[in-house]
Length: 329
Length: 304
Image (cartoon, rainbow over all chains, first blue to last red; front, side):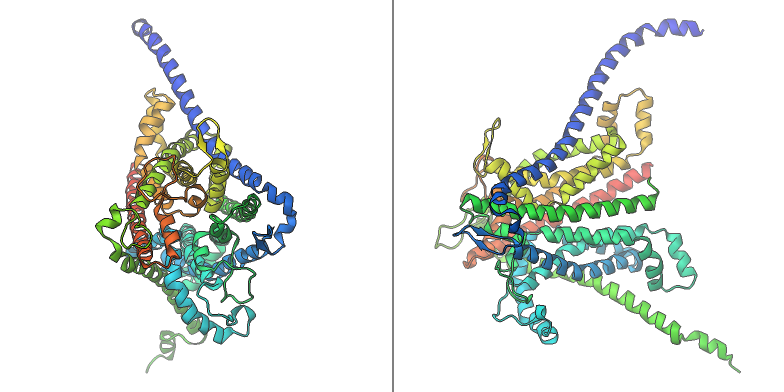
């Protein structure tokens, strides 16, 4: 019986097998090759970005050396360039924005994961995600004509009256709508959805048994959040805030629209300023000499280095945290 | 006679009272924060809508900008330019992104897959203006030998910049969907003697098509609103509708950026109307994408 089946069926598959093997080998190899090529194309782009930016900044690096970092000037006529106040502006606006948006985002994420009724969770979550989808140029346009005047006419006098004895909140000498403070507000609005989305996922990932156990022991919701949720996802929350920071550091368009593009910086937040990214965006059309273009690219290189470090740190923290939570699975 | 203990139990005092008040403060604060974010979104959308809707007219969609000193005119070149740029970006980012995702989820050893994922996230975190500088140095300042592109701004350069921004978004979202495809579908296919490449192309990809489309749509929404990468790559716009990717074209985000600080009220109104058009496009596409994503997630979830 067995022998007969073999005798009848062996010749046909032998022929079939050979052609199928050939087709499959070619197909498998082709697909593998194509997909691997695409994957390494992505990596190559990262490398090419770094290379081209360093290459473009090279003339400025050779001319100004590292002193560019702490020299403060931007004079195209005498080709005297330095980045100090742009770097300070970037740090001040980004950290200011994060100081405002981080507590808000964590609170929103807690609301979405712990407090909101099931029926409206999805809707509110989607609305906050939509805030992330608003293009930065639109946020900037809104910033110029709605937020900046409101900030200059209402917020700034109010804060200046109460906290004016602190130099950074002092009334600016001249009344201007384009201020560092307006840029901080715009960046805060832009970073809220990023930090919120990550924090919400983190909070939802905390095992329900832990939360129920805490409530069962008589804890209030706040105590449950403080003693169970926050400690178990602390690293992830830090990473979420850093990712928000990365977005704020690199934002060019919306900032350049509201910040006034002016150096040297004043101590008061209620006066015009500038950041690394906004200076690049603001000068794109005006750069005439090669050394000025190169100096702009040098600014871009500094920006790239800062954001790369922040994002890389955040990714590592998130990854280690995910590993911890899922046990490496 | 009342039991005094019961009366005390009913109303929290001292420490218990403080705990309840703190809890109420937390609940109130978190709710206020969420309401605040939604109010901000509402104010943004409403300001753009109320200021932009007046400028809409037939001319707005069909005509180029009016000559200097005249009123009227439209933003047809910017709309066409945006479509062209996003088209070029999709043409580049979609195949590369999907193939990358297939490599990582179907072929790559785990360590390599993780590295690719990490570097795609790093690419996603690059400031978009730096990507603009990169494309400027690559395709605008110098000439690419074989393709004959370069030495001036072009829609090729602008679209490529947008494509670099879309690539990590498409690849990462496709990876996530491919990871959701149940393994037993792949195993069933192998058990039937189907080879790997046919399994990937005929079983895995069709199953996850919905999710792939969603990721692409979200990436398109993001790319369509990007301004910074176009500043260096494609910012010298023409006054007429131009479909040639070798020329530099006008685009909606750049039009808004350039008109936003102009003193001319017509240009001003056009900036708001353009913002309205852009925001409507972006919000509608991302909302649709999210609904589609939920649906395809549910479909894949049920099959498991």
